[in-house]
Length: 218
Image (tube, rainbow, N blue to C red; front, side, top):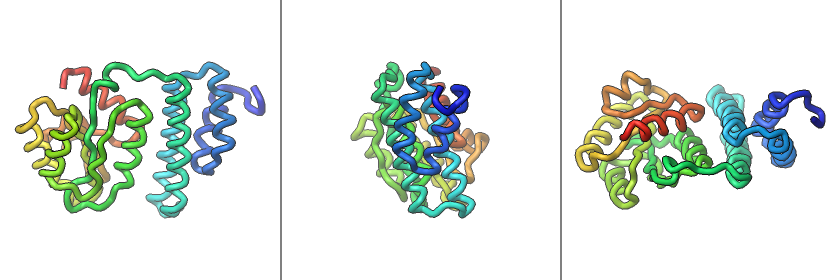
């Protein structure tokens, strides 16, 4: 198995290529894990772990924004290659369209950008509203793109309160919509109190949480 003793060693090395933004090594390792019969789902999870590791480093000032963006490009490249290698989208993914954005008063779109990349890698159709998004802009996005899922990010303590009116108005106008939220000051209890159908702590849980609310009929 090349220079590696196990599938897990291959996957760990693959994950680390994101932090080192080594596209060439990633290509080599992707080919190796596919030959080893590792499932696309497991490969994607390891790539997301690498991306989350890079995110934690930028949050602790051990990585610059410019360096992180290169890491993000490497991760997206890897996720797209996995998608092209034959991982199939299920009906849940193909039939659901996601409007995503950061709430009004919040310019921080790093977390949203990561989540958006993960959604795309899993076959979801994404419509990015950007950051500092008003309630009305979210509503227009849902209507225009016939979205079934509303993904909301709030990264500041002062902007978290803006999540509730978005969900309230969205559900009033579009009863079919399912809302999933996340952010630095968000938690499951708060998300539930705002009317969200799901809370996702990070990119590692967002796909599972999204599929759960859709499979439950939201």
